[in-house]
Length: 294
Image (tube, rainbow, N blue to C red; front, top):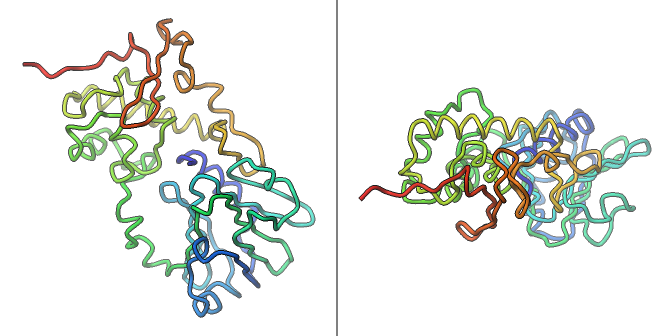
C-alpha cells in the first residue's frame, strides 16, 4: 500500500492535471469500487468542477464545486490514470494498465471531463474505492475519525508525537508507528528508516522510550518523509508516481531491504526480523533493544 510520500506525490501530480476540469459522465463496473447512490452521483458529481486535490493519511480527496468530495483510496493495487490527447499520466500499482490503452479489464471507474480527457481508476484486486461524500462531513467519516495527525503539519512536534504514543505504551515502537490512529500515513518503509535514524530498536516497548528518544524519533521521521517527497516516493514494487516513473527514495534508504549489507553508520550487518507480523530491518549495533529494569 502506498504510504504518505507516495500519495502526496500522486496528489501533486494530479493537482496540475485535473484542477478546474468539469465532469460530464462517470462509468463503473463494480459497486464495491464505486459505492455511491446514483441520484447523488447525478446531482453532485455529474456537471461539477474539480476545485482541489487534497490528501488525508493515505487517501486522496478530490473536492468538487458542488461542495462534495470524491474520496479515493488505492489500497494495494489501485491506479489513477489521467489520459488526454496530449498527456498520459499514471499513478499507483505498476501494472501494464498504466501505459496501455484504457479502459481495460482492471478499470473500475471512468470519469470523463468536458474536454474529452478522462481519469481512470484501475484496481486489479478490487480493494480500493472512490466514494462521494459532502465535503463538510468528510472529517466525520469513521475512516477519517480513526486517523491520527499528519506528521508533516507544522503543529506536529515531538511532544505531540510522545502524547500520541501514550495509548500504546506496551506495544513495540514499530507496531505503534504503523498504527494509523496514532500517526497518519506512515507505513513499513518509513517506520524502519525513521527508527534507524533515531537509533531505536523496532521491538523496544513504547513505555521504555525517553524524552530524548522521542525527540530523535520525531526529527528522524520528519527528515525521512521530506527526503522521500523530494525523491518522488519509494521504488517499492507497488508504486509508480504521477509521471509513470518509480520514485527514487529507496536508492537512499539506510536499512529497508538492506539485510545482509553493512550499516551506513557503523558497518555492522543489517538484519531482518518480524515485529508485529511485519518484516523489519535494523542495525543490531546502532539500535540496541531496551529492557525494563527489574
